[in-house]
Image (cartoon, rainbow, N blue to C red; front, side, top):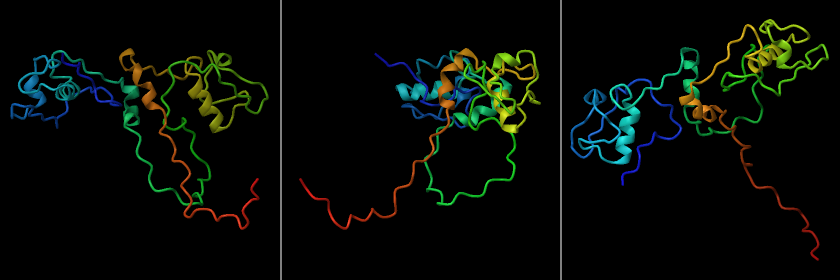
Length: 211
């Protein structure tokens, strides 16, 4: 039997055809997406017979292939596409002394986080007022200007990020069901681990007494 064609791992399904796609298959002719307009692609053919070749065709030509559906993010989520690229390999370790932080960082969502679709049930923020506000306390209220003890840029940013359903001036951002399995790909890339020491530690001057 022929295994089903699968998308390459950790790739967002395409919304448009890939203009760079070329695949000669076993027939020697360099097929482009435009050559498949109106044809079914998932069973291959015309020299494209392997599972890898069919998978690349299905992934690269969602507009041209008759049996493939393009998957397009809504405009509000289009800026998140770069977050779905594979995590880069760690570069050379940073210098031991970190650079000086800016005097006042701008308020922003936590880096590399997908905007929420629902309220965070774990959200609590006492702000400067001492009361542990939850998302449900903000139902029907505007959140982007803060208030009620939540006055700092960091506190307001966390409130806006955590409570998109409750805050009146925040819009929830929900992926369509077909793209929901891609949410784990938006988790932040792991930070590089501590670099290994430049030289191994010196052995103790006197070995411990053995039993």
